[in-house]
Image 1: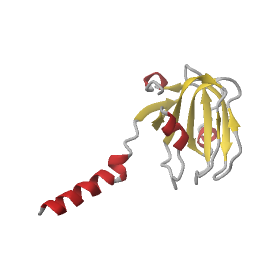
Image 2: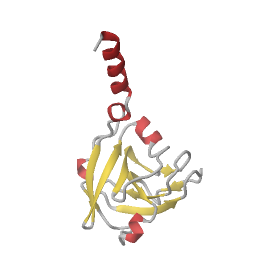
Image 3: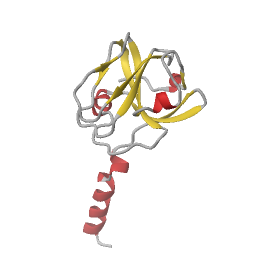
Image 4: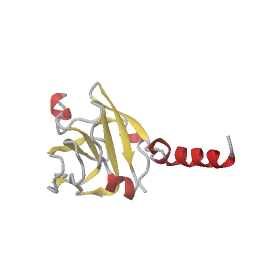
Amino acid sequence: MNRKNICLLLLFFLASPIVRAQIPLLELSADFYRIEAEVAADPQGRQRGLMHRRQMPPNQGMLFVFPETGRYCMWMRNTFIPLSVAFLDENGRIINIEDMQAKTDDNHCAARPARYALEMNLGWFSKKEIRAGSRIGGIEKAPRPR
């Protein structure tokens, strides 16, 4: 293989989504259900969220780690899959859960100050009978926000 081909191969490999988008994963739990959550702990990750995704496996989601406790809102611009979001306090206790339709700009907000938000496929929480007051385990392992 000549030098030009090696350079092209290296460029292709470095530009691939697997290398480019190494999103941290965190194992969480809700009751006895296991959740594999991608973590959005920096401004770019929180802004991008699950935009442009066409599907998400059943027990996967995204955990948003906010820099401080506050009244955060989520919306679905450029998000192609309907989601449910649980707003969590600093201990991982669910404050409220909102259902969100794909490709809308409607705000879905925490009922009181939250430290985290966990997005899952639409209806995931209700199907598992997980409600406000339930605790999401493993939240203490979340990275510090940036």
